[in-house]
Length: 273
Ligand SMILES: Nc1ncnc2c1ncn2[C@@H]1O[C@H](COP(=O)(O)OP(=O)(O)OP(=O)(O)O)[C@@H](O)[C@H]1O
Image (cartoon, rainbow, N blue to C red; front, side):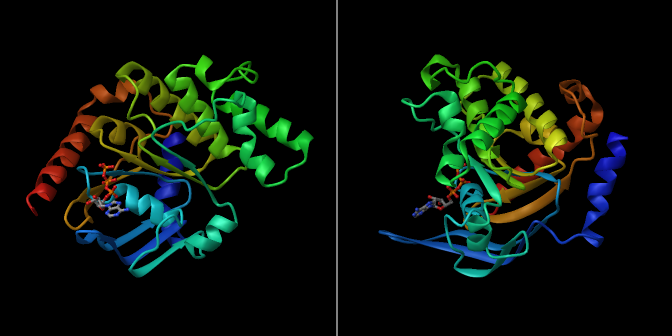
């Protein structure tokens, strides 16, 4: 059943338009000491319901690509659509939620107050705000922590609250920039499992930046291996594990084989320098 769904997602290209479609996308930053070409010739389609990880060495443009999708940066050349429209329109349509490496919660607001903040800004009525906050806190297993303050929660719990905040207005797309990078391995494993459950339950499309090969292989339906100077896509590797995978798959030969392909891709990508 779960494998059928992965298969269906893979076949989706023929029937549904991609959530993200980038064509020959480039971005050059004008830095004080000269131009930095952060992205070059990026061609990427991401289908509805996929979990795509961007992996690559520091400076290969992972965050920049995520920020272009989110309309936080503008491409210098090429084209990109998000949900079939420009990133700017997609932002105005509230098509995505963004999760940063640091939870970035306001310390003077309760957890419920933080999760409900986007809804306040968007003018949702109070009753609906409360309902959505409850629902999303339940999704990240934080029911009962509504009245706590961020500093009363562990790092992992804070990051779960920031995921609930990103989901509060029910965007189609979740953009995550190394959300678990600062957490210890055990907490990270747990959050990886929870994120997969959440993805399976909500059917969101996820674009996830990571430096970790096991994390990318465990979470993704597809892994985009990037290489630096200029940032480009070196290789895209499919990951066909069932959606309801558990951490045990990390011991399987299939898992190790994909991890090796990613490692190899990263090594090859480095040889561009
Ligand atoms: N605002 C900026 N101005 C100038 N250069 C920038 C800016 N932001 C990023 N860069 C440069 O663009 C390139 C890509 O950076 P980016 O942060 O996207 O890479 P990354 O793969 O996400 O790196 P990391 O894994 O370290 O977060 C790097 O060379 C970086 O120094």
